[in-house]
Image 1 (cartoon, rainbow, N blue to C red):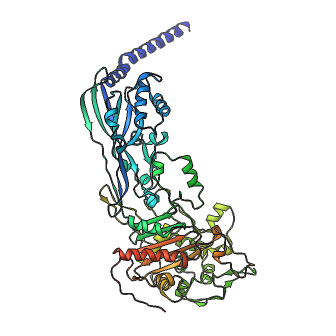
Image 2 (cartoon, one colour):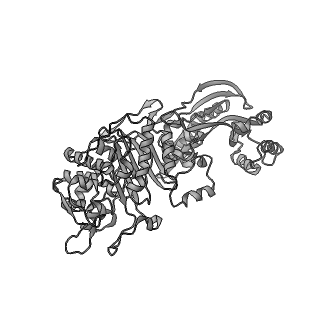
Image 3 (cartoon, rainbow, N blue to C red):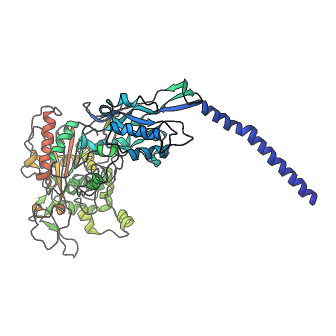
Length: 602
């Protein structure tokens, strides 16, 4: 037994000895070889120039401002004369800079193991540096290098589309080696969506250096992949026009080609993205987040609103597709309906009622009772399924980050969300786009394109990515073409017929428009209120949202214009004038050909 233990210890000793010899003679060789290699070679990364973003006419929406960064040689003492002298010479030329912050930044990055110049100032504009450049470059301990900084010439005009870049953090740097080197990353909008494209790829120089860290020879060089631009479908002039139309109001407008190309998308109010490029101040940040009109929210894809009566065309198609309700059968509207023995009245917007209401009239005059009665025949699950197919309550697939789906409710959805059963009254209010129903303005625009063309397009902001064209994409949704034709006639009536809810704003345009108004309630109306309070008499944030979604020309659809005015009251009177001005501008700028206006009422 004793002998076995001695042999075991002996074997273990030799194993450890051999292992150690291997570590020293073989593995360490690689380590010291690499160390020696690094001592004679340096690899310097070349930062790519970020691609620009341009509108459809070549107008610049995101550019790179030319300037300089300043670096200081390593291994200088914190309180030493050399460092003090260098920083003093910089602050003398640029009095707005803080000497203490510059020194602290240097000290934080200084290390005996670092042999590279340390960046202390990230960016100084070209025009500011010109006078100081000859004086600063005399000092061999200073290195001034060309640098770029993101700049948005259009300011707040297209912020929610373009987005902005900001300084990267540790998490960003860990994900992407390019971000780590360039120090900025797209935070919102297209800057975020296409960050990998816009930032390009790193280049590098491998050089041989002497013992004193001086370059002796260049061994290898690879140019960066850069200037990968985005060319948009957006027309900045139209973007500016719509921003002007929304003055003193809050809301969203989307102008889209029926193939999905987005010509304009405004979320108002907005903010200046240049505030974020170098780091936003706490004062400016508080102003943004405390604004009740939510300028920081991209309402185009993230704002969720009840669609109100704009949902009625899709609802009618859902009724037809379900096979459970006949759209050939008119409904009688006396101003309300009741269900069961309950005395609760589900009221139409017209307290006197609409009388006998066929489908076309239901769209033209937006009769609620028509949709109440049909919904009771069809049920919420069928309604939900088909509305999803028509693009409501689902993401559109637009090339923007943080898009929200919204809600087209069903029995399963309510049970999953609230752990409660579905009630029949909830089906009734869902039929007119109220209750739990929530959509984004972009969903309404996309769904309107489907109503106009029978194709459901995928919205696109970008026309070309680094020179490559982005082709339109469509999906198809099952529907009844016969009833869709009747619905279109109803939408025509909305904008042109004597009883049309948007006639006053839309009937005198140089092109024929079809559309649908919507008034989505923010607060419910008490049953005891016999005469509804006027929207203008209500507190601002209690007023209904005003919708109008349209397409034109009626006979040959080319464009969709969807407008939402938050707390604007009625769609025809508030959203209508904005949509009308958009069409006038587009006609003047050649988006429409000359058209013979044809009036065709029932």
